[in-house]
Length: 85
Image 1 (cartoon, rainbow, N blue to C red):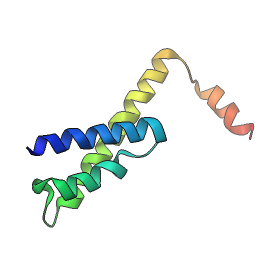
Image 2: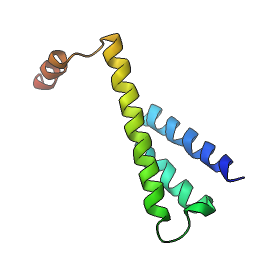
Image 3: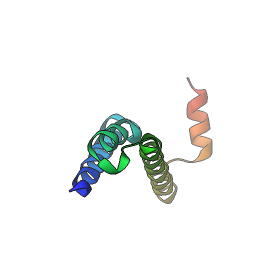
Image 4: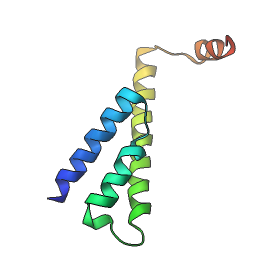
């Protein structure tokens, strides 16, 4: 039954990241700590935070790879855009 909460946490993190630009930790950590018994105890919050931050890193890596493959953002165009403000 606990795996259902994992799926709900992942879906919530994906929706929050995609629509609002939130970190996955914003959604995943509270769900994992409160609803999953395996994250109870002294180190449960640290484990939930580590899992959420690892999913953030994986999501950022996939986004960077996709942008590099499509050549939608080069380093010079991003630098020039940041200097125009």
